Amino acid sequence: MKKPINYTFIVITLALLISGVLFLATLSAPASLQVFGNTSHYLFHQLITIGIGLVLATVAFKIPLRILKKFAIVLFAINILLVIAVFLPGIGSKFLGAKRWVSFGNNSFQPSEFLKITAILYLAAWLSNRSFGQVKNNWLSWAKREWQNIISLYVPFLCLLALVAGLLYLQKDLSTMGIIAIALIVVYFCSQTPLWHTLCTVIVGSLGAALFVFLEPYRMQRFEVFLHPETDPLGIGLQLKQSLIAIGSGGFFGKGLGMSTQKFGFLPQAMTDSIFAILGEETGIIGSSIIIGLFLAFFWQIVRISQKATDTFSKLAAIGIGTWITTQAFVNIASAVGMFPLSGIPLPFFSYGGSHIIAELIGVGILLNISKHA
Image (cartoon, rainbow, N blue to C red):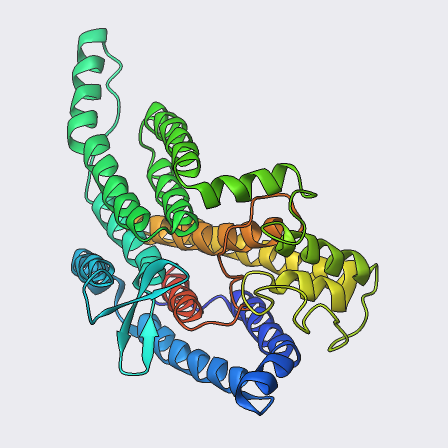
């Protein structure tokens, strides 16, 4: 029986989305005027993107969950093909040395952003159809069951992680790889799989991430700047330096909306990666704390939706989507304040861009779909 949807979750999501639009309206005006000769180009583009996202969120809200579960593997397979398509001449487009976008005409989108949803849905659907556990009658039975779990459960999960990680490594998108990996590992853990599976995955994954950092000089430079922010303040360390200046100059109450000075070309990627720094400059500790509080409340409501869900697929899908969006939010925030290496990932519902915000709104639509059946 359908139940009332979670209106508290809707209010929190709308608060984040509206705050993002209002903030981007003032933040994007100088850059928009300089590039396009008017102050509303970026804002107008963002509103169109949000409109598309809301339409797709409505579709995700209306589609029966059993259909979503049934076709999760199809959606994932299509998404994998789109991720591969970025490497094809005439289809994929390159920006700042990385191939991550599929172009059609004058428009483009980033398939890896939607991989966050489809990979979570596929893993949730696959795990919900599996029966596993540990037999404790005797050592031989336990060993036999553990071996079956490894072959039929853990190895396929590792293959899924390896597929996603391999494709995103070729795209030089380590941050997106990390976000998806964290979400998938949390989904796997929450499905009550053997604990040592998760521990081994985290350990090996951490070592692999460290290896990826050392293999690329620019990633190693970012990590060195994270450890020593004073390193190369006019080069690789410029973004972190200006980000900290922006947040520090905001003080407790901030300079006021629209009163940022860092957005006038001083802070790189002000509308995307570093948007939280401008937020801190204009609204201060108070405004920043409110936004962080909204993201915490956002995640808590998702946990409640997951707890109330009546089937395993819905539970796992909800917690996976919640982990993805909130982890991405706090990695972005931590990068802005120097608590995490610069990641290059957007702040959900705030950063300028098309693919990420559409994917996030689709995720919200799926969560509301789950809540009406919880």
